[in-house]
Length: 104
Image (cartoon, rainbow, N blue to C red):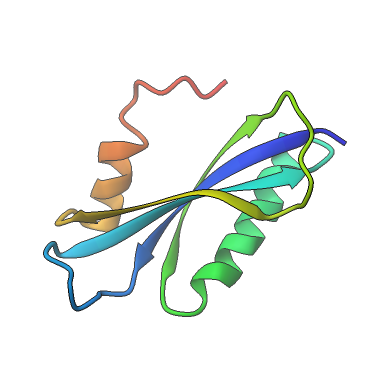
């Protein structure tokens, strides 16, 4: 089965050391799936479970078809936390949906 990486974006629960209004997390996980649509569906299911604790999945998933195989589905390979005063829709537009992305 082909391998894919999928990035999902989350709004995190406010933390005491936070200086900005919001804290966002970008997470990239790895998946084996029949196609890119299935990989995104699997990642979004996992994102909802991951966020169910204290955070909120913002509904943005971006996938990439890998050239090499992976070992385990759902393995987290990257995470970035960013403080921002932007509201969730504005944050996604500013960093992920600027209109200049090449999505195909």
